[in-house]
Image (cartoon, rainbow, N blue to C red; front, side, top):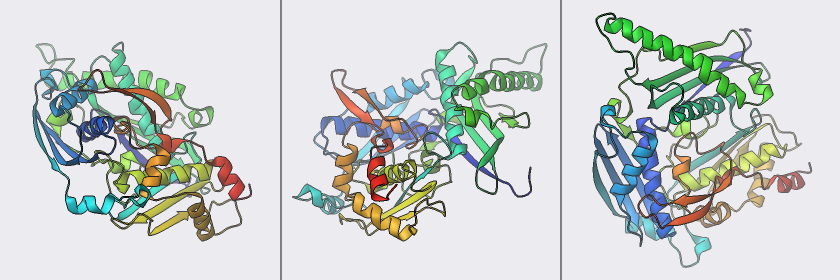
Length: 428
């Protein structure tokens, strides 16, 4: 590697990772409340471990939902549907500890005039975008997500790599040059849970059986997974793969014990995976399980919307947007855009920030309305990233009431619907 080049790494985790199981349950519960009562206030936390699910938090809603049915459907849809995984959605115990939201918090949010709705908490939120991928996401995280999305597709198709189990992790290291441009994919790490598909017997010791399983998984990742990943990549990114790529597969040698049986999962423990893989900043607040009155979630989505449209409009190669709030106050206390020296306009970051502030209403109610956030759209965000996804309209189906459906728009904050406004405002 050139001595002036540097490496940057990001990771992702699959929908079967225990923390992501918890995130998906929390967001599925939120979706059910919002579908029945769009004004619901929800802060739902989930813990998953061997044979157990604990759902806790605060709710203020007119809706009633069957928490057990929702949690079990999420778990079995992920793939935890049999006893040998030691975590089975059909049989695990489910404990509910949801209670009413604090009136002291609620009084700071609800207002007679909806536009004056206060922020649900104090804090700072970040949005980021960069032009090195089609989705304006950092390349290491973009690739980490795609690896696991394709691995999950292979598992669900059931034609190849039939030993796969739901839990998996990936990590991608990219080499960058002095102009901060990616020059090649340096290292890929894939760790995937698997069946004990080669047992020890009279002809093979446990050590030998483990080695044979690992050899098979390595070969399949190289010859099945990686070609599928490359096939969905743009030509420019595909060209960054070369023969010097370092590939690590299941580096511990074996990964049979996994999921919530192997590691307790909690809502909100994968916030960097959820956002920008460490390339952009993070304010510290988790997203999953929170209704959009919590600016931890809604303002982070709004900041991503701003950053993506700024970069897509050509204002800068990359943009980091920070917004901050005081609890109970509608107007943000600050909004700042950092282009990290990549601006294509003759303006300082302070001037760009002022211009952006005039273009976007960042009051919580305005964000909710602009991005259509009071809809059951959140479980889809809870694995493979809350940002960098493709906006689409789908039919949402309740997990506890078969007759309840909604037409919803997913990932509205990923729309490039303000590019023309940006270009006009910045004279591009």
